[in-house]
Length: 256
Ligand code: NAD
Image 1 (tube, rainbow, N blue to C red):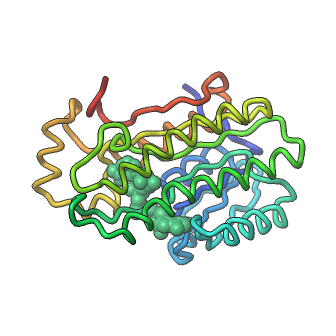
Image 2 (cartoon, rainbow, N blue to C red):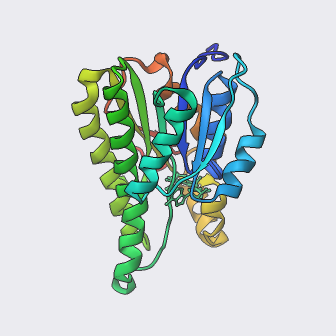
């Protein structure tokens, strides 16, 4: 499929753009011609991503912004700074900000449960709501919102009761947003990665990784770029009849 220039003149915001999957998404969207807003709670890593981006085909500038998706105020000022710079809201929004704070159910601290839900689930809600409101207010006729769920939200995972709950929530949030926003031409889809090599999975013990690899039909972990490729498809008009979908990018792990 020819994809170069597929996203020319699109403005995209990518949360969690400072690392791993979010960074790969920023690079992929920019390489297809989008102007990209790299948003991350870690401003230094957002700036590093910004420096790695290829110029888009029209020579428009990308930008980096410090933003905490779990804070309504912070999300509001992110949208304000985007609109001040580009005079339009982003028509592509990829929610890749996420955290893990793993522990067994019997030992999980309430605070660690809350923190993961605040960032992964509430953060996706706040960003989607702000972007959708801005698109509707300016009379936009199309948009593509992409969330990062996880295969773990579908099948559960030992030691990740908070994370699995947050990611199941992200899927429900995305499907509901898809139903409510379709009348504005805004599509919403959820990507469910399996085990992808990023700083997030660097923390997983080697023993667990090798057990997982044995269960993956394609017999390897995924690359962040392989998730980014799917996000770019969902951002583009190539997926114009796809909304409310959950797309697994797992090498076949836990299919069916
Ligand atoms: P990562 O840790 O490499 O990157 C996550 C980024 O999110 C970091 O740059 C971090 O600073 C940022 N972030 C954290 N809290 C934030 C906040 N409150 N506001 C704004 N930014 C914040 O992780 P990753 O592996 O690239 O994961 C990206 C997304 O994909 C996450 O939602 C994750 O849950 C999901 N995912 C990852 C995998 C995997 O195997 N790596 C699997 C399934 C789902």
